[in-house]
Length: 189
Image (cartoon, rainbow, N blue to C red; front, side, top):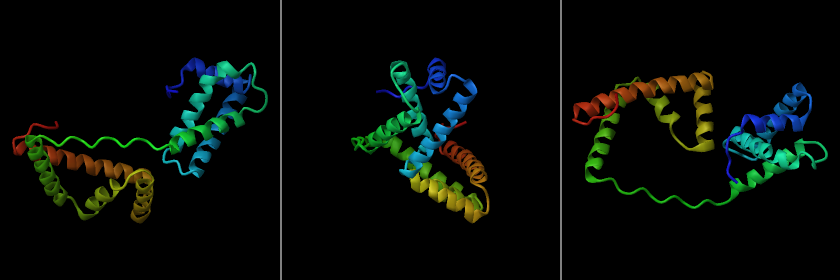
């Protein structure tokens, strides 16, 4: 089943199914969503909010089929769907094919881009170099954990770290683009 986004009509049907009173339905929706996020966090999901929203989307698409026959509390229905989504995430996925080798002219451009990046990194203050290197290391959960640790060590909030990393990256990008243009490559603004 594809995971399309929730339409306003399906969302209204979902709220009506949760509770005929719109205020209570909205409160129940928020409680269920919050508990679904906790459910996925406890299972080690790298994107608990996305998984919770995927669960809600699937339930909303099923509401037209089950609203007249389903009896009982609504939350357990959401948890059952969440468990199925969790199990889907555990399925082994086929490995993607390795990328094709770059043509020789692209190899030269890539090599030049790396040289420009190295040059531009040296122009940054030491703390900015450390932030950009550590901020973009790792994948998934390890990246999240590393960023939290980096923010704590820097004595700033995670959001402040994001802003700082974005600014350093923007400076680096402009420097790399300028360097590439100096070497005859047309990239960037």
